[in-house]
Amino acid sequence: MVTATMNIEKARFNMIEQQIRPWQVLDPTVLSLLSLVKREDFVPAAYKDLAFADLEIPIGASGNNGQNMLAPKIEARMLQELGVRNTDTVLEIGTGSGYMAALLAAKAEYVYSVEIDPGLAETARSNLQRAGVANVRVETGDGAQGWPARAPYDAIMISASTPVLPDAILRQLKIGGRLVAVVGEVPAMQVQLVIRTDENAFNTINILKPS
Picture 1: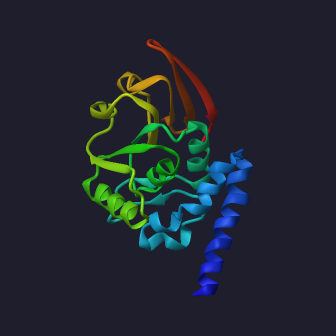
Picture 2: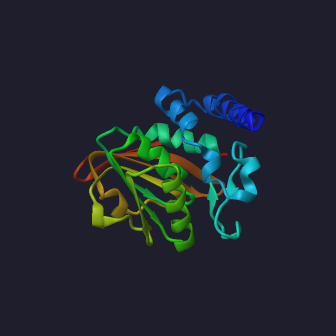
Picture 3: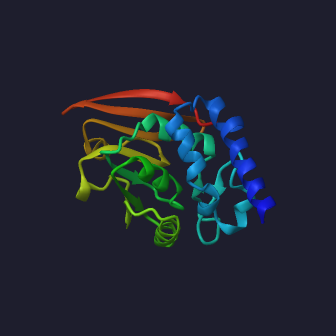
């Protein structure tokens, strides 16, 4: 048991040092969260051995419903770019297994996370409860146009890729609010940071290509 725990911690350390730091994830708070929030607890049982691998992991009851956990380096870079503060109310679109929600919740005051797949939403709730995360509410529904019921938000994370950013979602940001998403379609995809600078103005920054 001790050896297994040591092996897991070694794999986690290697993930951070060999995958995540080289992608310019250098924020010490983010790096600390990646050590504290146990990614392996949010990975489907069939893929536990790949929890720290540099690849996307299928999620869902059958593992073939088209949804995936993003590669760790992409998750970490998106989290860093969002710059969540402890007073923030955050919207996440695409809960998946609940791992990103757990990372966001460790930095934010409160997180609303929306998942269209009822089975995944229930899995995420169970994973978050088991991990002791209390400041996340997982909503079952279609977040394609955001989640206006709880708007406006200080920060929005779109954990599933989107061909374009709907204006309806952008307008759920507070002025000064930030949004991070993977935008576009293969092969022209970008991780983008969008900042709402005033009532009708948004500043978009292309961060990286998620190759």
